[in-house]
Length: 100
Length: 221
Image 1 (cartoon, rainbow over the protein chains, first blue to last red):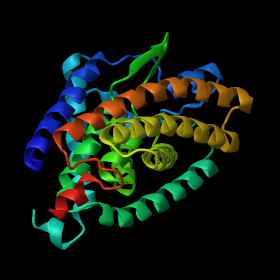
Image 2: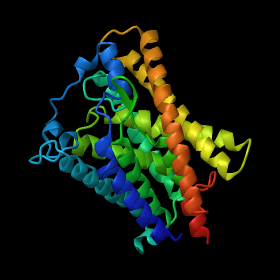
Image 3: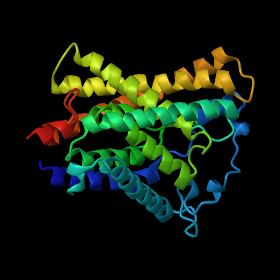
Image 4: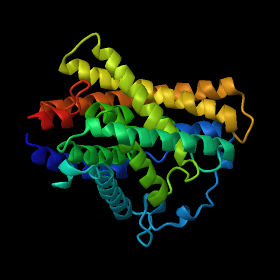
């Protein structure tokens, strides 16, 4: 499989995981959150940061509420953002990468 | 495993922040050697996939779930230095865009997942490959690396909590809980990692070779 074909196929899989499979994710606390509740330090979490008011905070698009479309869109936006950010990080390494 | 703001003291956050910055800077330099031209899309793809995979929480018992951290997977696919960058990018996006993982805890989360998770996973993967070299060994080594990486992160968190936790918790109890639940999560992550690596190996014969990330192999052709 060529790099191009692989990248395309893997991108589709990634978007399906973030935009569809993630909707079936468990809402139960994850390992660390669970342990923090068990041992009584979950309450020290500070959610006062401005980032908690961001338009995509909590993997939901503000204005769309907490429905499935909102979660799916947040997942897709996250994937695209991660892809673009990493490309930026590894792209700035001069000659060979700059050809792209 | 995302530590929120407020769990750890400011001095602890400052120390983990400094370690994270140093680690990411070193990884950025080292990743040049791991990553050729063809590796750029692969590195971006792995970053994206790790983000996606971390969204999928799977129930592991009543009232508790776990998700893949992806450090070992990324290390095996693109090399450990590049994987440190991948995981750090994911953590940055999660903290800034989605308010998942505290912003003052970003350094802590980078230490736990992008440094400890990636490099323990990589070390175990390499150790397995000393005994056997085959596609199966690459996949199984990645899976065992993933299991070890989750437990190592859990142990590291316990250590950080001992140093800078805001609530007095008996540390052996905390360690026991962290290790018990994250071993279970680690088994899940191990299986997912082995399957994904096997799938990548099956579709890209030149990918995920031990110590030879897809990039270098492809660039050599």
